[in-house]
Length: 498
Ligand code: BES
Ligand code: MN
Ligand code: ZN
Image (cartoon, rainbow, N blue to C red; front, top):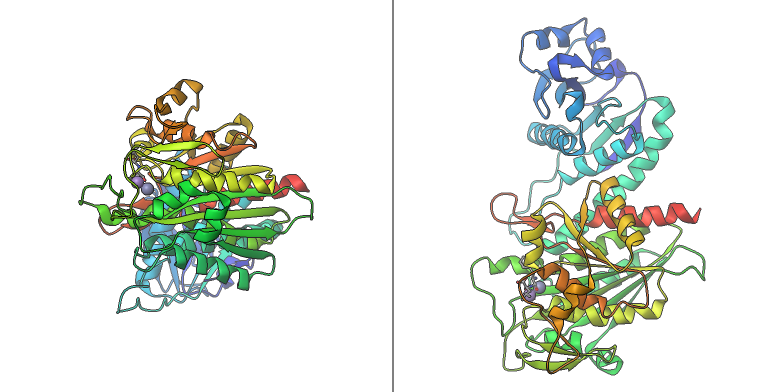
């Protein structure tokens, strides 16, 4: 999608659809007032008629409004001042885009003014407008024989005042990078397990290497992993015909000696549970078990597009978890790259098994921080529902930075404790650690397991099990979370560098 910032006066704006805001009780925003004046009160007359009150996400499409160059005017409700929050703003953008899509216009101009949310940060408001309008244009047709009709919409313009136009341009660049990254994550997530294999993910990394000068991809294959001692990661793919891959993407936007920020994604391209087989109902959704990896791909693409002046390493631990005669069995003990031994009591707790070796591998980059992202536990859905990413860390400052990035990006996380009390649940009679800690605090004990491999650096774990995709119904599909949070975190690191 082509986005642009415009600052010309409202009546002369040439667009197929001019979107202006109505606040509750029919108050017009400044752009709406300008349109109303140019049309000699045509819009206020319609408001007085009661067709739209300005409740959040209400829409009313007007044709042939006199005195305007715009072909149509879409009145969009923004609600009461006290309800002007991210959530309602996002709903309003979604409603507007619904009309824009169904009307089939080729251009739209948002002239919503400065009070989209109560937050006064113009950059943030405009960036969200870019991200969220772009988000609504996503459609998946990769594996359909009948492709989606090409979008009629070619251009989204955002109207701002002259003095805000510089901030608006930055918001546009960052917003498009984030929405592009999010789309990449959604595409990878939605692609089924027979297409999206560890090898396919490795190919995607090589394509990014081709596309971006500053990014180098290296694929560590099973033989090399064996030599590195990554027996725990390898044990997950034992039952699969698909070879496991450790995918490493190094982005060098910073100075030579700058310590990198490392992202590590869980890339289970399908999770049957292995010998600890999952029940059949809804198992198809375990194609989404590589959404952590997908968010790493999305964030890496976004930072390449924004050319951030920092060094970042993206690591993806990719494997398929299948039952077979070669599969790992409950009770099997494997040695990790760190030397610690693990008793695999449940082969369905496989995410931590691939991540632990990837996290040990991450240590060799002498990282400034390491953040892993994983659809790790069903328990996280019980704890936080489908709204917040679970955040656990061995460093409270790092946790705070990630929570703040989530708030800024409207891609929220919530911290869970990582107290020593929980560690004992992982005691094993036969190995250094067990891979499960029982039902109580399942998200926390999973993070405790990972914490045994991250002692050397600042580390945080993001459990995206509840937010990475929508289940069932028309909205079923990958969400692209938490690309916005990760990208914001890295944007903030880049800002600190300056
Ligand atoms: N990928 C799943 C976690 C998951 C389940 C995410 C459902 C989203 C929806 C993970 O590999 C898994 O199976 N975890 C087990 C761990 C348990 C065996 C300790 C779980 O959560 O049940
Ligand atoms: Mn599992
Ligand atoms: Zn899994």
